[in-house]
Length: 402
Ligand code: FES
Ligand SMILES: [Fe+2]
Image 1 (cartoon, rainbow, N blue to C red):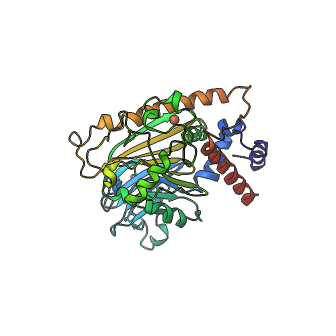
Image 2 (cartoon, protein in one colour; image 1 turned 45 degrees about the vertical axis):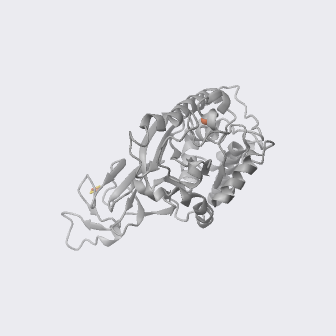
Image 3 (cartoon, protein in one colour; image 1 turned 90 degrees about the vertical axis):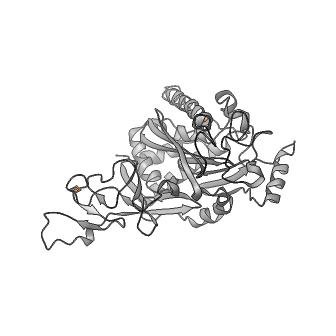
């Protein structure tokens, strides 16, 4: 169990603009603190509405040590529940994706409807009242086809995020997409090292030769107008096409549409689209990338031809599961409109390279010679933003529980 005074002292040791003290990257108690202070309190992006096509379709995953299930109910509404039986607590839905008319606990078959109500409990006395034994609900929100959950009793405000992201994202028509591929990767690194790495492109030129062809690796946080005028020209072109570019941001989220490198219409190795049928037909799909990112553990790129999602779920102090998802237009046919290996190549390579970087970072952070070092304002402002956010959330949690 974590000691709040110890965490407070570690946070106080942090020098502004520097990476974190060692224990915050490798300590088992700090991991428990992170789950309580960050993952059980924040909005987390978990996927897309099209992953739950029918009543009873569900997605089951575990946040920290808490299994949750997100499902579509009989009215088409997406709901979330603690995936823990109200009898003796067994996990009800197996981890992964599935479909069920009712949720039946595998232990003693207590059965819940899609609204979470207990509808069957065998061999209980006639006087047994099922009503107070519904599944515990969790908060669920959707934005333009994307799904977010929060396990806190009182989640952070969500409306500003929805209001600002919707006009940027709606044109990608994610409610008429399909999941083309999903991958998971286990990284032997603390989740914060995984996310710091995912929030900067300082390492991209050396670390990601494929991604660096299309991705503007030298860009600053908000893709400020550049000397060559590329950003201005892109923004003018998007304005004429009626596509907002942002940037927009709140405490725990950001979004911006930015231009890819000259000659690249997708995040692809050769610059050409990876999917013949676009998700957003404006400008022939040549619309740069809409990047949106949600603290603590997610970023996404919506391009003209496909959408990519990255989330990192911590499972231990030095173990993190990275889930990647690729979406294409629902009518795009594999083998006709896209080649699956080609579609997934760039981010598969990039994720493997990032895994190696994060694991190598973790090894070095273990050193008795490790000292927190400074972030580059030019190249790592979003990594610093992430760490600053982590520290302020943690401090807020400690104050609230002191
Ligand atoms: S624990 Fe679920 S039915 Fe017994
Ligand atoms: Fe990377």
